Amino acid sequence: MNRHFCGSSEHVVNRRGFLGAATALGAATAADMTGLNVLGTPALAGEMKKGQKRVILLWLAGGASQLETWDPKPGAITGGPFRAIKTDVPGLVISELMPKMAQRMKTTCVIRGLNTRNGDHGSGAKLMMRGRRDEAGLRYPDLGAVVAREMGRADSKVPDYVTFYTQTEGRGMAPGDAGFLGARFGPMELTTNNTPEFIRRLETISDLDHKERAELRDVIGRDFALGRQSDAMNSQAEAYGRVRGIMASEKLFDISQESQKTRDRYGPTQFAQQCLIARRLVEAGVPFVRVARAWWDSHGQNFETHQEMVPELDHVMATLIDDLSERGLLDDVMILTLAEFGRTPNINASLGRDHFASAWSMTMTGCGAKGGAVYGKTDPKGQTVVNEEVNAGSLFATIYSALGLNPQKNYYVGSRPIPLVNPGVEPIAALVK
Figure (spheres, rainbow, N blue to C red):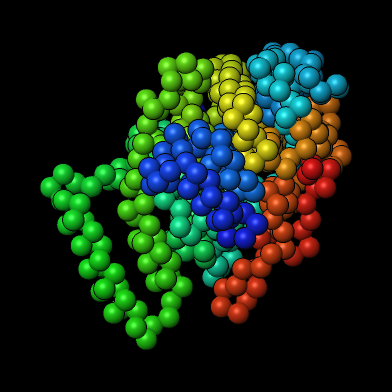
């Protein structure tokens, strides 16, 4: 096939409850905080899950078509060859390429009225990872960094923010970025395989050597910090301070720890395996995981591209929803499908769809999102939003609100207050429980 490339206290584990559960389960259990066997113990799992919200972002890199997924227009000149099918929500139809999700839309809300006004891969991706544009002297944190900051725990032995982007197309256009929050909340980026590079201690270095090197660095770092005040320096020191704990999380990335039945359930594709790892990570307490699936940029052969990729998304997303639900996690884990933009209703001479940011779709599942809700309406050809238009800012305000965060909460850069979304931007109440 030709491809055309163009720390809020309410979210922290209750320490007393956790310690009580850990004591009851014995010291051996409490010693290994990163093992999923710990989370399989109901008493401890209940304490760790309580109140801690987490996010899995399925990043459809390059721009998936809303007309072949969440907003089909069968019969229209722009509609393409695929039918619309009914779902388990009366009156809601989606593309026939998504039969499994059609039976799970009661868990999912759809926004069909996105108008984000940016059809460029690079700046569009940054906008849809941050909810707003950077200023000349200020880099905003992306969604992952904000969730890591708000939902992570200072003493956590697992990463706060993990991103998988192992295809090459478009990777450099959508890097994770902690912005002014600093390195402490930057992502662990996996770009070559499903296991973090350099997470293991070298065999040539003993455990004692490793500890002593860390202690030496701490001594030098403390001496350097005397008389100096720097948010960047403090953030780097915090990041280094978590190294040994994060090294212990290696097994979370190993799907051989799962049963063959579970691995078969997700499927053999790289996207499926990464989503299974994402489930393992959020179950262990990782606040934010992004799994990128490239490359949806279908300027040519749009229908063949989507006929290949949408069924994979349908299967993996449905499996992830079921898995989280069965584990009692869906009320505390949000699944997002998002991209930098959608695709044009008009079909070009190469039977493709081009970049389109004026009327496209995304979904929110679980956590505080109102399942079965549909917000926004496009005209019969899908060219414009005719009702309930949504911009990037209001989308992010809605996501934060569904996670239990106040979108107008302020961070401070120097003495300047910086709210999570721009002043005056409100969440969409109809999409939040």
